[in-house]
Image 1 (cartoon, rainbow, N blue to C red):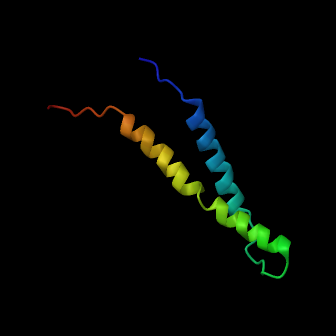
Image 2: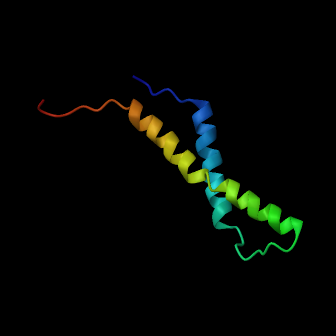
Length: 72
């Protein structure tokens, strides 16, 4: 039986990976001294949902996987 890919979840997984890369390249030394730095900090906080999204998508696929035990 061939595995069926769900494009929506592939997109979510790819977006989450890109968000994690963005988190790791973010300069965290910004202060709240200008509107641009406040916006950058807000974007950084929005990117924090990347890991929970990735874990949720992975959990969805793990829950759909058929588990077979040996000798049972």
